Image (cartoon, rainbow, N blue to C red; front, side, top):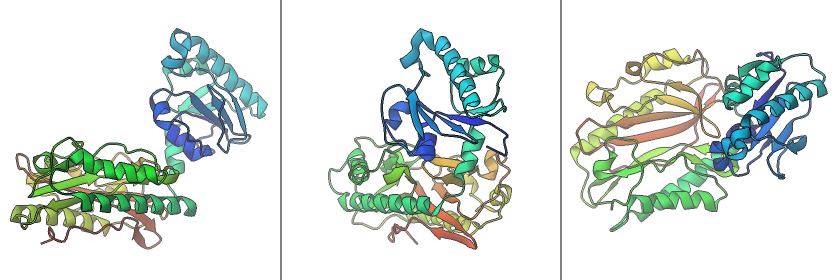
Length: 368
């Protein structure tokens, strides 16, 4: 905030609010019908603004909020935006600042327009909050380790439960249940596919029954206990007969991509260098290759992200730093084929390289 020269941030995303004050009330609801926001000043008390009484945060004070969604404000949103602008101007006076530059996160245009009419300079808060998340504290890393442990417990239950008559969604439900039973949150998607549905990737679980000879791939995308993310992928083989030579080849290629790119991870490496040095995806797999090589992770998928070089230039002028948590991704599957393989690892960038935070074993039957 000091680098951006802002007097305060107005935070709206439930994930950002949890980062700031550990407030975790109906986060999925508030992701599409925001009813809560937070004033975070550069100097002064943090205030939580609610549509209804609540507690359970580390904010310095709790105040009545204004409607900031159509669900709450309807046709009176314009008037509510003017009142919110008044609140912000009053808050700036309250904390004794003459700075009129305010960073606002994810709001409807009427709020920005109301702030501008009050003579405030408005900038996007996203750069600020994403930058603040990049380096994880020891406590955060401990939370991420716990999320990964819970996820891997669920993964083991999934692998043990593959059997006659089991559907994709039943298998996925075991991971979801394990997360909830350990005080976890939600999953960003039901990313599990089997047999002919594993190619192309990015298909969610269905009622398809898993059959002998299938590859079964999944991506946890799990908001775990304490709100921190476990983002790990594995692909299993189901059946008594050995996997096919093509299945083993696809798995080995995905494994090689993962291992090669993990060796690039160390502090000081730029996103551009990572892209340039990444494992060269063979031409036959490029069309369906995973959208990114690496991405940051914390309470969700986060900045930065590196796309494969054949997908375009890097969007971030950044370098890896010790304390960042990142995920390394791979999907190998050719257009028109039945099989594909999805793998992903979660890493902590250390002072001299990286430490694996995900420890679930790979499928030995598929490793050539």
